[in-house]
Image 1 (cartoon, one colour):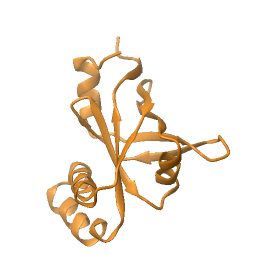
Image 2: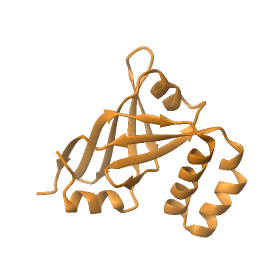
Image 3: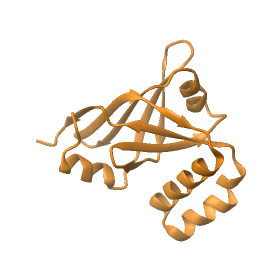
Image 4: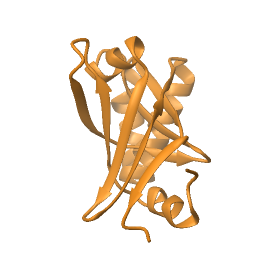
Length: 134
């Protein structure tokens, strides 16, 4: 299912996503994440050392849920990890600006994120389930 104009607008608003990855023992692991919709791809970012990053390096299957009360959208698929330093740093800068505004986001990018070994998570929108958008 492709995104409709309504679901695309919903994802473009500032919300948080719950990212689910698969632990080595097969159990789900969930994390609340910043995200940005870029065309037909959801972009996220994390440090390489966090569990979700390690999980995705081992098994790239992923599920994302963005909920607002009784309305939600889930995306399932396979993530592509980008560990190019310049790309990952630009992605986290853009996410920080999206969630904290230009001044605070730029400061975070310089003072915090630039010192971290980060990866970007790109999730193509291929399998979408929605509820409450009728």
